[in-house]
Length: 165
Image 1 (cartoon, rainbow, N blue to C red):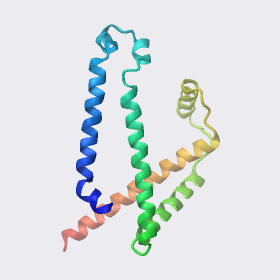
Image 2: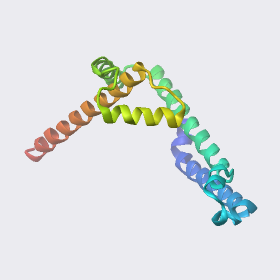
Image 3: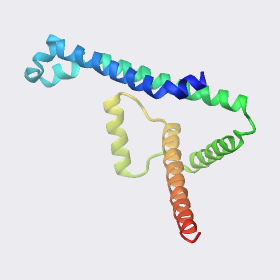
Image 4: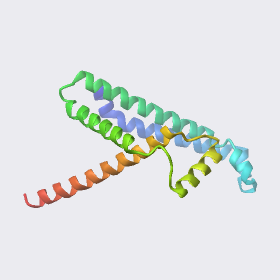
């Protein structure tokens, strides 16, 4: 399976993408609903179903790619655990960093602009952000900023090191 995907995987993925694009465009251009799209009101454009196929296929392919990534990753770790040690350690470090960011994040919004944004989001979406959600969002932002800073420092350090070698 690996050798087949290694040899033909990119061509199959590209071909599948082209085929889905052709089907999607054919569905849009042959749909009588799209002939009057310029004359539709904003509400009618919002409620149109002409893009449903494209959105559904995009969602399916995204979920399929994520599932394949997880399955192949788990298979690789199980089949070769010694070679996967660095990846497992890296994943553990990211999890620890996320936990630290989560514990450091505030569970409430104290800035007036943030409170306004949360209120707009909650009224527009009909959802409520809990303290846990806010802590998770804050922890994710802290984790992303720390990882960005670390990557920037590593880029500079290895750039300088390679310059002198």
